[in-house]
Length: 246
Image (tube, rainbow, N blue to C red):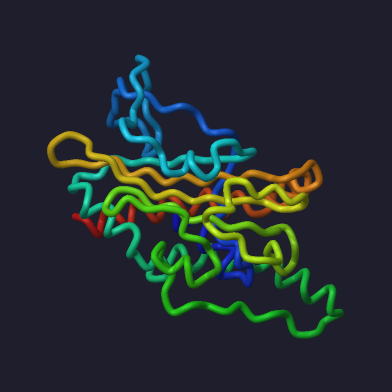
């Protein structure tokens, strides 16, 4: 969750959190985890649902244009994994800081060109960047199951040089039904489920729903440039989380 959230927020784009690619697949329970499978990848068989509890995410963005899911089994209790992830300051991870700066470079060049050599906008860096900080960065807390699942959302236009919101603030109760043309609705989920007696499955998911054909077209162009940075950040964060827990 933190990977894509940070990139836009730390580059003067309040719509942080874009780690998206193709439409998400369905997870099923009868699964075999093999040592040769990379993190986030599973071999799936059978038809039993993996999750016994409904996803909070489905309440707020059940239909979407883009999504990506990343998961990893960690050898720690559910509560420990959840608290560690939502309170992790990813700005303390050197590789993440490097990726954030690299992501902001194209925008700074574009600013300089538009201003004909004038000083480009300075990126404003918060003191920390945690999942728990998202409310202070313009995100809406959509729902939470303490110690298990946390969902944030935002509405805006991430493809604009300075990302803009929807005008009037969108409240949690309005998020699912928001359909004003020209916007992207983004929802970010952090979820941890038990896995055996002493382990947990950490799952982070992002979903994006575009409100009309024009916003879909604009988002596709935006994602061609931003997507590679988002995809690199997620496994780095999971690796840091695993080291912290062990």
